[in-house]
Image 1 (tube, rainbow, N blue to C red):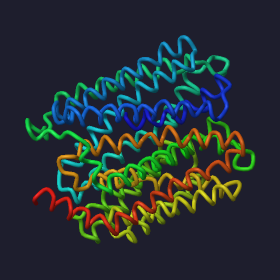
Image 2 (cartoon, rainbow, N blue to C red; image 1 turned 180 degrees about the horizontal axis):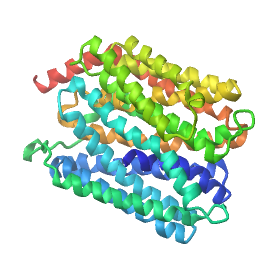
Image 3 (tube, rainbow, N blue to C red; image 1 turned 90 degrees about the vertical axis):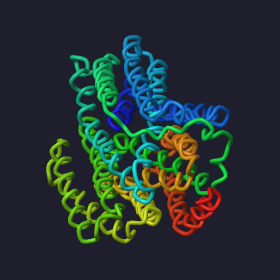
Image 4 (cartoon, rainbow, N blue to C red; image 1 turned 45 degrees about the horizontal axis):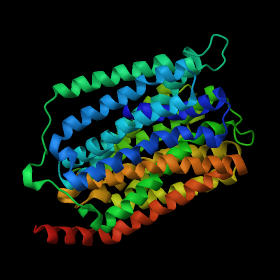
Length: 449
């Protein structure tokens, strides 16, 4: 649900752009408000943690997760009055509340998963959870696009704000059901007691955390910007000249690639599996997920067969990375730089293939950046997590800049912005490959281990 509702923004952007006759810059306020909430919510969380101790350590991860889900459900409900008044500012307000709910989930759920086992396999666990997140982002363009562009659109086929009412009420109901199920499940407790509560700015003493915050800013900004512009990119006459109804299926391929890569990452970065078994499991997972994607999208096999080339290239990149999160991160970022340059320079199918291939190489980036950034933080883990989540502000800022470039120089040339984002990620991966082992030794020495 988390991934599904987040990806619905990519449907809302072209929808609201036409409904309210917006420029690219104005339509990107959707992402600005949604991901800007991550920054505001995380900043508030961080400031509270520096003065009164970490809130999650006080209330526990389970209560934090439930609060995040309830807040997200409220944001979905607020789409009803926004649609009733057909007000773009109200839509933006609802997206901001929705983003605040997911902010709490980012801080609690991701840190919780990283703590549920050995630190060296945290990337593998987060890639697995992110894979199911990506399943939501894969079905959102098809199912969400059908709900808004077709099923609940006006009888004459014109765009109407009312088309968002029922879908988002359904989303709210499902979120509340998820909250009910989680409340009934017994979960391990990592709550810190009494004098162990962390105050102050201790997390900021770690260089890899500060660099990781910048890398996360660039990653979320790059991923969101590319996803936000795919439908508009494929509408360009020099690219594919496709309508929104067709483009949404290709948008699913972009997010479906992330799902394939994350399942492969969960296997590749798991050090308890032998190399021989990894290859077998990865092949089986890739085949199974590809079939799932093929059954979801309204495209023929011939139209998506090019994706098999990216899956094969993804396999090669994983094995060259040798199951090392930092090295694999650099390789994937480098490939995305090349794909973006290709999308900017080419036309037709080559440009389309290049932009859609970025998704599968985005796959492990969130999980790897997150776990590398908070690696070895010990008692500062939750505080460090809030700082990394704060960097999701990139999803608000980068699309705005790309929207400005798209209005000024055209959609295709605007992808120069994500190029710089992935270059920063490449450098962060290289930095962690070389220096993180020394940083971890320093952390252990300071903590007395």
